[in-house]
Image: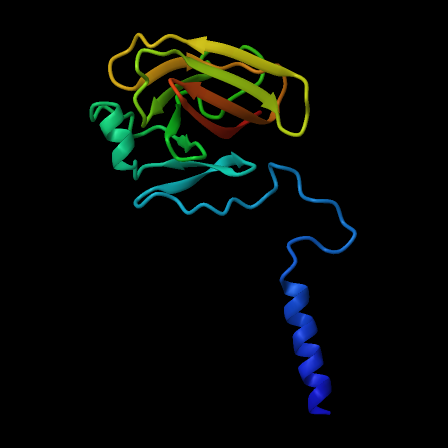
Length: 176
């Protein structure tokens, strides 16, 4: 009889190791749990998607340094992967289309020198090849920042690939 209990315990533990029940589809990017823990002093804000989370408060020191200690502290933000850039969302939550009052303003802060190069932003609806968006932001602001308005044609979880100088990073942002 003890072997039966040992076998049952092993089977329960093995079943608990799977994130998705056998035969069921993987969760959508907006439903996936985000495993990154928030920066110290930050709280998670609803609206993250895929592997990115949105935070408020507790801004990492490298972001403060990149803005010349002029970080918009009250705004929600997302950190890229790898964690070398962040996007502060002025019009939260972000909305598909071309909204105004507020618009989809995102202040991109890069933690690696931009060396006079523009920020290339390429966005794609997660899990799809179309639609996509692309824009280039000039390096014409003080500090390591790029102000932008990033509009997308339809709601969903959007992956944004950022590149500047010789750096590359990605972040997922949800649009309603």
